Image (cartoon, rainbow, N blue to C red; front, top):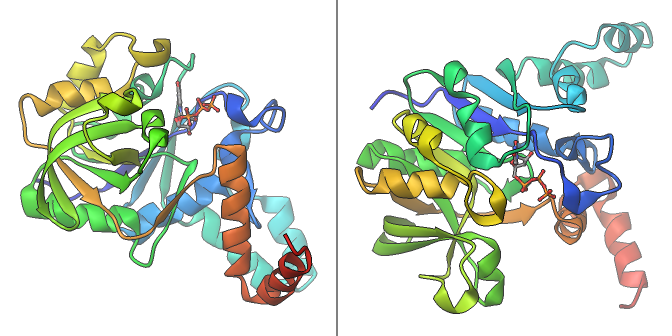
Length: 288
Ligand code: UTP
């Protein structure tokens, strides 16, 4: 199997769970402390060895392209004011990777968003990374998955354990356990009712996929919620090739959900040296 070089970031969704904040601002640009969600995930990709970043955008998502571009006036002003360290941070952003963009004209679902990236991906394996799934991990989540991909030479998806009825909000796998972190997938189902979930292993927004998924996606009709589901296409691919799951070490935050975003904000803020002590003190003072 060739080396994984490209990652697709579907960012064309409407962000309805986060209205009205996302009426004109892309959900993917919401900031955890001071960094947009999508930048955290692009950094995870780059730290895992990804060189080409493909972002799937749509109407009202211009800010995403601008964020990863050079901001000439801003850079010049910072240089004139001698703000070298801020300038250095700013320059890191557009130098992270090679960026390409493609538009999904209608938000027809995650599977459809991946399909519109087909020409930019070409005939090679690729990662799909959802910008509102933030994984806080010592070793980047995608890098942990790559180790499984390299060992088994097969597609890999990231899973996390979800106990209780909340599992029905996820894609869920049926599996054979290989070791504590690795599973061979035997089936997958999108958002099953709690009682019918085949396991407590939920699919999160990190995938390593092979280009033979594209012709299948093309044939995949609307599924759960009237959207073209990535899980439905992966399930068909599972019938013709082995598929693995990586139970990554780390904590996943659903930052596309208001409560998930608030929790992630507090956790990331508490990790920041410059205000962790003050914030901790403030939270304690609330005597909840
Ligand atoms: P979500 O379901 O979390 O995002 O999809 P959404 O549809 O924007 O949000 P809600 O549910 O209405 O609040 C996960 C990722 O897939 C992208 C989204 O932008 C998000 O980053 N996506 C989803 C697309 O690019 N196209 C789609 O048609 C659907």
